[in-house]
Length: 197
Image 1: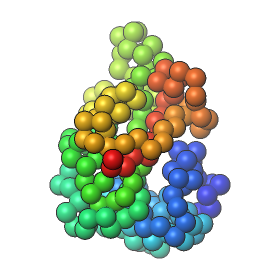
Image 2: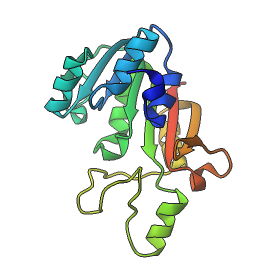
Image 3: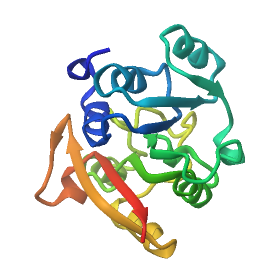
Image 4: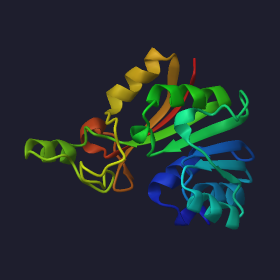
């Protein structure tokens, strides 16, 4: 898969990854990001996904992937094994959010985390109307959502500070475009590069 054909959120992550680096993609899905990185940046990529069907698709596409439950941690990976560890639009569905963030920075030099911003103005409007938000970045009804931990930009940054994690870079987007003015209100999707102090 060529980088230009990636969804805008995956393209943002692609741009942050160093050429020839070692990348672990947690919740890798069908391996679109890793395939593009292997082809365009010659990374050594490795994916983990809970869904066996996704792992089979990854392997068929030439992407190294294994089935695994992120809730049990990353004990199969040694310390500092990767340059970048990616968790894209998955952290809000993790029961042990703090633990997975710390594990990412145990096995990797840098973590890239993306999540739907619950503070987005359209989410707030739906709440004012008496309903849980449903949108492009939150595509589930309240009763069938895998998401259990909603957060806003400040919440994630406080979690990082509590754990001695430094925010290297933050980008907020809406509909594939960067948002700089009032990002917590106007941005639907947050991207963070984080590392240990």
